Amino acid sequence: MATHTATSNPQTLPPFDIDLPPLDRFSPCCDAASCSAAKPNGFIPCKRHPIPGVIGAMIDLADAMAISKTYRRHLVACVGEDAPEWMRAKVEAAEGGVIEAVQKVKREWMLSEHERGEGEATRRGEGEVIIHSKKSDENAIKALVDEFKTSSVGSKEGLDSQMASSHEATNSGDNLFVTACDRIRSERNPTTTTWPTSDILLFPDFKLYYDIEPHLTIPSKPSTFSILMSSLNPSTSQAPAFLPHRDLRPTTHAVVLVCTHTRRDKRCGVLGPLIIQEFKRVLAKKEVLGCRGTEVVEDEGEGAERARELTGGKVVEVFGTSHVGGHKFAGNVIIHTPTLGGHMYGNVRPCHVEAIIDRHVLGGRVVRSLWRGQVCAPAVADPGGQAKL
Image (cartoon, rainbow, N blue to C red; front, side, top):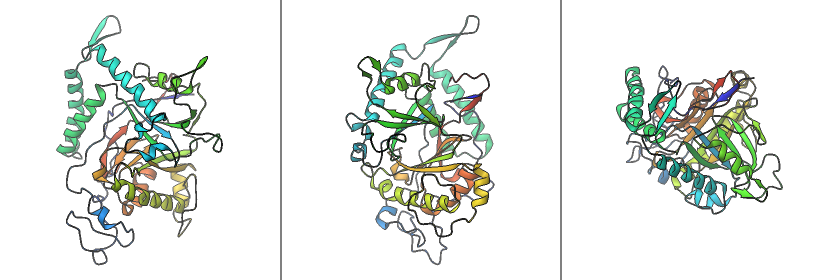
């Protein structure tokens, strides 16, 4: 059976929806006659999907949206809805929590890399020496930028920003993007597992690791946390197959993460839950929503047959997540699929959700006009059976 290898940088452009009408940033879905007058920042209230005016007026619709770095992996700690992380502006400030523990290990990685030096030489093949330096990485990224420019789908501002941020991710130990989400804390033991033990979602591997204890050591044996983090060290970076986990790919078509981090910024804190509600409503209507709750479905079954065909009968999960950067470009959404990897969107409002589902989640096309970059590249099948980076 083929395993899957996670890669850290995109080599080709994602399939954009450039042949479809663009979704204007933070645009309403009601027609001009029924919409209210625009606010000074350009925000137009929508009667079908109301947003508090004070929040809409604080959204940045003018500046070029910051482009996400491309990371090797995205680690998402499933801390539940009532964890101490949600009471902090920075989730890593929750003492004793899994995010704090992960950030400590990341700092150790970065310190170790710094000590090795920027111009470290590595050997490859029969004595050939390759020097990894800032200059060589800049040349590789310049080639990717040139490809973007000739494709006619990238703006200069976005490309320059992606070049800078991709360079930052490539040249540091910070190749692991870390957030928390409000998914149930433990899938296997939902009623007995207490904080800070948490399940861990890992992308682009599409794996759920069970009941990770955020302690580096415990008496007589290493903890699940130390095993996981040792495996994700940039020097090895192989997701551990021997820790108890579940492969999500047989059952999950996509995972949608929407920033709802109120303590960090009210814009995502207010807008995020409205976006989640709309994602769940539309996905439930199409009968592909996982973990269904009490969401209201107005016309259940519409488009469901086609949606189930496109997902292969798999489900789409939707969760609230912690800060992902760029709150002024709320709403901020990350979508992970096995085929496209992880992509970030900004200036999303509930009016956009159904189109994003149809184009990206079901159609496999990245929405160019709202795109904030690739969070992580898709894992690729390794016919040799060895998962490596």
